[in-house]
Image (cartoon, rainbow, N blue to C red; front, side):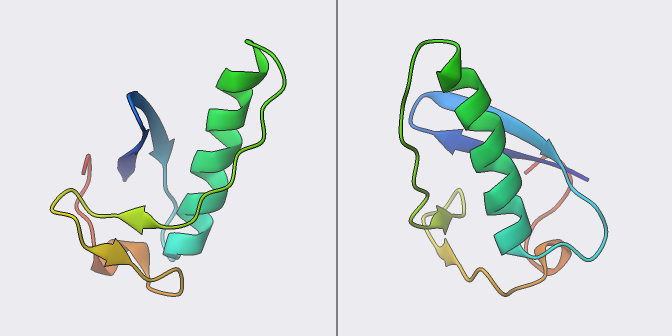
Length: 72
């Protein structure tokens, strides 16, 4: 399953493994976003929460496959 996480105007595609939690997605997406920012200089990135496309906040302990479809 692939999920796109948006940080403002920047979208990061994360391939997700079976059994991942929202917390796993947050860690991977933040890591990938940091790599993009490091190319432009030093930045601190903190992810406070993840919202679904309709605005609902996802709980970090939930199983990702229970919440999103492929390519969400």
